[in-house]
Length: 308
Image (tube, rainbow, N blue to C red; front, side, top):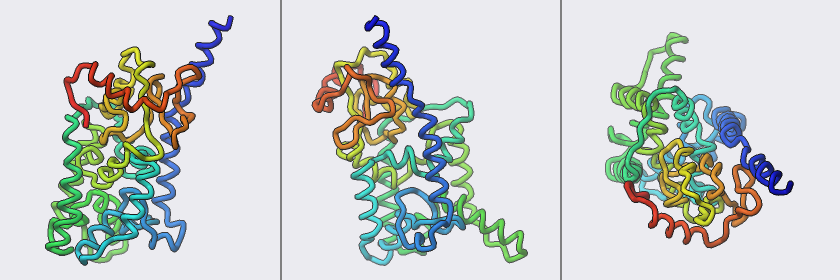
């Protein structure tokens, strides 16, 4: 009898609705970041990709702050401090659970169109955008440069330029809409969302690139148990972003949506303690040495594509 009831108990614990919990969490954070609910919040830096010029903005954009301070040749202590504190705590989980622009891409990604995956190395283009458009261009050429990050930002076009232009049309004021370059970038990005999940996050988002650097040592992290792996490939097929968590559980390209934790061999941990959603049932707990063990399994598996 015990042999019959133990699997059922395990399945009940493994069937937590991770996707549903994540969806409603994203809705909640969208309300927070898209509602000017605190008058003083406009002077506080937020940890997500969201344009401060949006009529509904509650917090400052960290990328806009860094770019503006770089143009002034000043160090953005508030923005960098916010990113370090949040990144050290959650890593890329901020992107997967809290970012409103990521939430928009997830919603469009639900449209049933053929999706394709990109090679893992394409994620490094985010650091080119960070070093070039957010730091170097503002530092050497100022905010007036046509390559200044905020002049190309798709979030600024969608959340600020277009709503402001619509308000000007409705009030009869002179219309100062977004330029052709910004519109083209937004249209191309919107089209890409139908054929690639989170194309902005994967290819261009400097903020996601910063948070990804914390994935390997943030308080919230993933662990892979090589002894619990039966090579069913569930961790790969469940990942909507084409990341092989069995090879590198804290890779730069993971946004920690936690879909992979449906597999008994992968679990998310907070400060060394296993979390609740999607964690393995009793008897399949992950040991503290699994990060090293995952490297051994990675070497034993086929290496048709490399993870960072």
